[in-house]
Image (tube, rainbow, N blue to C red):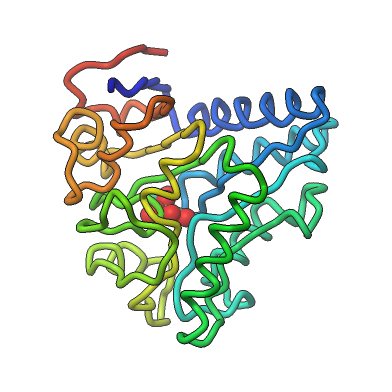
Length: 254
Ligand code: F6R
């Protein structure tokens, strides 16, 4: 399946386009009295998305009908840690919008290891009970991970505890500073992600150019977990010019 690609002039434009699509879906569902189930990502890439969504909220967009599920969390990781994705979500989005806390779901990096499998199963059941994910927002690691589905992750993988790739831990060093980057994480699986009805994959910066090209134009392989997105019928990839520079062909330019 061909993935639909849009190239934007810069990272802000990528974030704004993704935010507009999310906002339109939330509004459309509100009009039909329905909930909107969003799969959310942490990391540098979606920060501009959350910034625009917060601005739209200040202009009147309500998230009271939205339900959110975050993709992943480091393990072990207390939610209060400055490095937790739970905290990232609060500081970049949740503290500034009217989402009902009961509708916000994040994976819990503070659990004892013997409770994680059950926690992951409950997370999957909770997504299913919410009606499945309407729109999943994704970033991409330089090694092709989506969520923390590192190279070698199966197409059939579900929410689980994983070992982080050395490349992923190296990339996280800058934000962890003096602190140790955890060796593990809890992540929704490739299959959990592919069940979303709509997927938006965002990538910005020239350091993502090679993996973006492999993801879109390379063969489908568990060595590049993001390449499984080629098998999904409704994915759009939003990139800035720098992240698009290794693509040999582009479906649409903007
Ligand atoms: C974050 C996540 C990761 C990131 C990826 C890119 O929730 O699931 O897959 O999307 O590591 O990170 P950034 O955006 O920081 O380059």
